[in-house]
Length: 524
Ligand SMILES: Cc1cc2nc3c(=O)[nH]c(=O)nc-3n(C[C@H](O)[C@H](O)[C@H](O)COP(=O)(O)OP(=O)(O)OC[C@H]3O[C@@H](n4cnc5c(N)ncnc54)[C@H](O)[C@@H]3O)c2cc1C
Image (cartoon, rainbow, N blue to C red; front, side, top):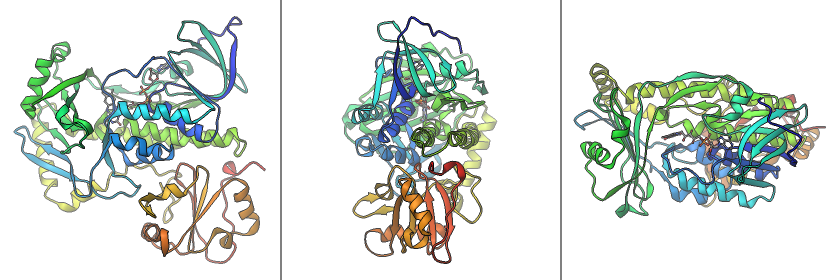
């Protein structure tokens, strides 16, 4: 990295983790680390969140991560979840006729699979969530300039809001500093991929007569090679519009109100709307060659850029935060050796590559550039829409978006994301789980299933034990696990803090050993 470190700048306190960038990924990571009491500093170069269009779609895993942050109740007023059976996605031909619809189906992880949300309000919640933690500080107006890796620390130089250079020291540095990441550049890590040739005209509008109301419609996409368009209704009267600009169209000329209103009314005449934000944006699809070098990590857009067609740009960044937060916590507290951190890139990068492929495929359907492509896509979807089993397969996400780590061992749920069924009165399973490892058993407590030595070791690691019973408060959860596991009797699930199944064991006899991977054991 360019070394701007000098002897003239005094070093600030020691931090365990410094996060560069207070976007949604940086703030989510800071909240997760804050829960564990990690000493964190977040540096953000802007003084306030730029009032520009950003993500509008969010999946169920993302909401579950914000549930883990303890912020779900504060965020939900800015989220619209489709109810079971709601039409959430309609594909229209150029004359506006609906040719393919998807409905909301199932909540395996506790929330609707596809959701829309108000990005700027969610960011405010994430930001104020930090106030709960004495050990976490966010500094706005601090622009990170350079860093230097030492064997046991990272030294960082940032320009503070008065323009002075300050030197800071941290055990680990995480670049959550977006697509133009200075941290990634400093690590000399290349982005592999490319930008799309065309740009999108993106506008956020608001109909104030709908203030306080959830959206009444789902997402609509017009398959029309003359001007592919998407309309995404949001809570509180907001709506996202996206129009693909054709070659030769002057982006600047499209940004004024008159042009935007003309484009909008061609699709869906609207009264009483105001354009609040507008942007011409060229999407990119690329993944960093590496997510880590020694003590420095990349997460979110700093590590990968995705077009929004699969609604996975932000979601994959939040998964990075969830994956990295508990690993850093365990290593910093001495519960695990530093090799555990190697698994961050091993797990996260291949999944992002898969998501990028999916987004590109969906982009081909959503942005036909030629009439022939438009006809083929429209006909294909019109035919697919006639088969209810095919629609249902797509609704339950036949294209498996949720990652499976460790290659997803056959016949077991090892490596799978844990389901999150309801428990008790309006509660969800994670309300019963801690922020550490959890051992879930069925009908018989773990103490009866594990030998004394193993049980004591798990206890010493701070593991939580949860026994689900077929009756009482947890009966619904018990039934859900029974279906998911294909029979839960005798099963023992070791669940990681990020809710992935670390180990799924069928224990046939009494007092059996449940092994753990060496690098995830508690320190002796
Ligand atoms: C128009 C648009 C529409 C989108 N729609 C969707 C969608 O519908 N669904 C979806 O999932 N995703 C969507 N995305 C992508 C999504 O918004 C991003 O993936 C997400 O915001 C990335 O979050 P992040 O925290 O990684 O990065 P960012 O939000 O980019 O945050 C990075 C932060 O780092 C700060 N920073 C940068 N450099 C420095 C520095 N040197 N020092 C200090 N701070 C620094 C920046 O100021 C910024 O605040 C969309 C993106 C755009 C642009």
